[in-house]
Amino acid sequence: MKARYLAPLGIFMGLLVFLGIGLNLNPREVPSPLIGKPAPAFTLPDLNHPEVAFKHTEMLGKVWVLNVWASWCVACREEHETLLQFSKTGVVPVLGLNYKDERSDGLGWLKQFGNPYQQSLYDHDGLVGIDYGVYGVPETFVIDKRGVIRYKRIGILTPELLRDTIVPLVRELQGNA
Image (cartoon, rainbow, N blue to C red):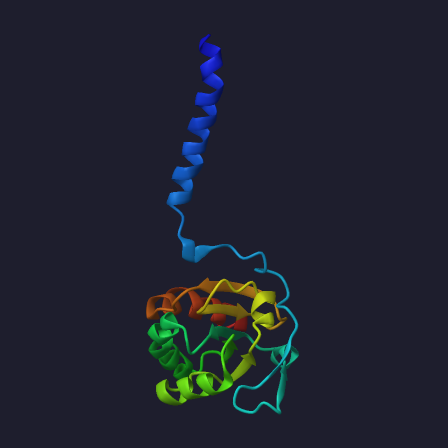
């Protein structure tokens, strides 16, 4: 009779263990299946100059950061000053991916708050964002010289995150560790 209750009790206890582990995970550190894999190929128009097409292959041979943003994104506004300061350091090229936005709204947003991007690409339908596994904005990727995604951040970039994680990784990838 006791054995009849042990199996369900054991299953219940196992579920509690997995729940406890899950509650201690940081949702900002969702592992991306793209880490260590080639960044998805794309060709997109420049936000400022729609007649100019940009291909991801233009960044081969360079370590670079891709920041996914939108004018409608409240969190993007929160990280924007940090991005502006980071881009001024010139440590690494920072490209923007204007995601599911209207061109005029994106341009107005950059004019109002400043433009931290070496180039901002326009992904109106969000198809490139989907290829990159974007959950929402902001998201940031570090891509190495061979075009391989080496890091993904979901959420706001902070000065501490840049100092402690992204800049050391970029320097290592550049060979300047």
